[in-house]
Length: 189
Image 1 (cartoon, rainbow, N blue to C red):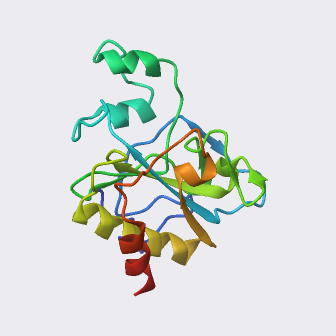
Image 2 (image 1 turned 180 degrees about the horizontal axis):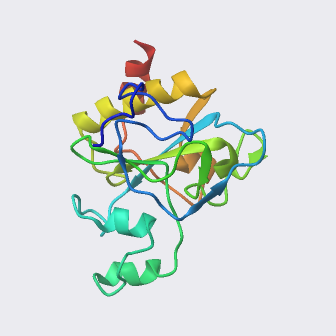
């Protein structure tokens, strides 16, 4: 992790929405939000590459367009895919940030929430290293709770949902392995 810029606490965001406590890995897969739009939705995802394997660099490589399609048979189906998320939480709780929160990350795809299309326009995407069915780690829940509190202090986030909630029938993550009651209960304390 890089230290916070002078005058900013580790849990602060800078003017472009970069979390001082996160390891910064800039993704080219981003663009500007529509004028006047602040993030009001937090979308929780899960990802592992290859599926079910943890700890490698493949997610970073995917979000920075450096994933070698020859490195694993599964990656061939991802060739040419241009995606990102604002944040990625590893199994050990390490926080990586790919896109500043003031910008639009490409995490939601075709999506809808409470009558609004294009959730990327008004959301922040957090990817958890995991699968739909495998439990997430204590370190991930603790880090996600801290991150959520920090983001709520900076942005008018009024809803927290899973990818499956904004793209039903198309996406299933974070899946039944994610304990929503635990997460929401921690936020209510």
